[in-house]
View 1: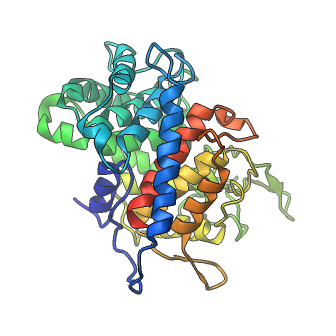
View 2: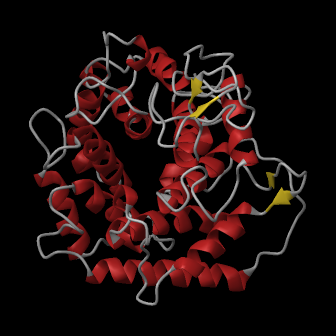
Length: 383
């Protein structure tokens, strides 16, 4: 059954990012800022030019060991606003896709060295961005492989329903679950076209895992769940583990803190799992995110993972259908313009982006440039 998010999510991916908000809040008519749109176009062109000159002759970006980085770069090329890379992909883009397909395994996974779920999910998104029917068989096999990775029968039931890295044992985490659900959501038309292709994900179990990572006592009674109002509705990395230092309350109970990037991953996961906008778990996640809105850091993590945070924020708020973000102080934030300006100001003179903090590979300019381009391409249609 389609939810109020469904059409917006589909529109989001068809432009590699969102073009049509879901159930948007009406806003006053405004005159488009043509000059600012040109600035964003220039930043996108400059970033894509940097990617174009930093591709390995074998077709990959950054490292052959992690094809996900190449898939993110290709997705950025496919999202270029004019559509020229969709209609006339260059030899370099075709070589990049050949590198991705060369990493496809007979079982459906797409990876080189480790991180099987992460690489497979991100590579599927890159293949989907090409809108090339020749990739459909790979995508169907990839779907079934990801579905087979859903954790079941874990001694700790909180982990059941999620997805992990694939090479770290039978544990689930919020980020791998989000990337898996994203790939499954956007490739669901392939299952509809081929109903005999295999089983579907246990979506109810996936929702169980997502809520098992949320700091929301009403739906998660785990002992680590924070009762602090500052954490309510946000997410942790996996049940019982956050990337932020825990705290001990007055009663001596250790609780885990919510943080930014993984809370956007949680909101996106609920959306991909077709929860309705008025679901209390969705509302609580959105409330935590708007109350902790900032572009200066990954809330709770400082500079660690800043660009991934900005990427997930842009994706989630666009799909959620936020025009003006209602801030905690009662003001409305033109978050699209602010986010685009932030990224423009962070772009280096050579067209690339990179984080001075290397957590989660963000020293890698190919990775971070791809994140930034995907964010700007999401923002551009609505500026």
